[in-house]
Image (cartoon, rainbow, N blue to C red; front, side, top):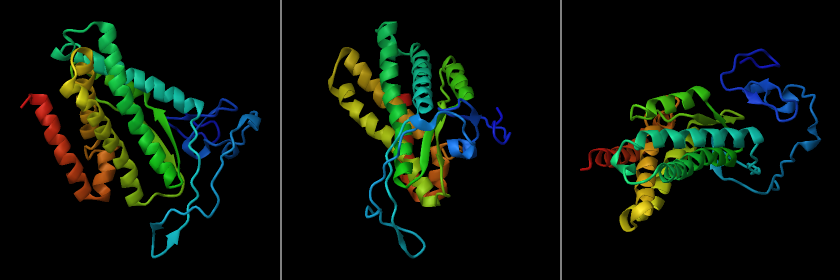
Length: 264
């Protein structure tokens, strides 16, 4: 789809909440595309006083960055909900032919998939957003329709290519270190969510046991998948920033997923 302001082809265009037009990342903001909509509804971003410092070493000096409030646009909320639902159905389709869902009905299996994938996927993307905003960048999630189709299609054969969208970041060029840390936040969030589900898998029974088992395994899969050093996955940016950090995170994740897959 083409940007209505400059004509640039954009695979994931941004929709303006005020005039309804579609624009590229460069012209997404109302002032950048000479918006003719009603800007009186535009939220005001409140920043903390300039005395709030984020001590980050740059080229021999320290810089002060004002923290800004996290704001979710209607388009971002819509895209997150659609991508979450699509991944939930995809994981349900993939798991329904396994022993995981052999003793539960469709509503329970679907609810477990939505809960486990939803928490992992949404928190994964929000971690990218919040870390990027901590560094002072604009960040919003955008779904990738083709990625959603691929996730649903591959789930029918038992393997899921889970890439329904991504958090887009804009602002001054991020350093390699910042980009690596923003990217690493997502997989580490999945690991955290996985271990929140783990006690249910170890100590609960029935549907709660299944919730814990699927929650742990799905989030571990999302973590290791996103750490693959292949663009545009998080692992490629982490690998570019620090190969040591990449190995330290990827190696144990790969081992855990190997044991989960083969039941060793």
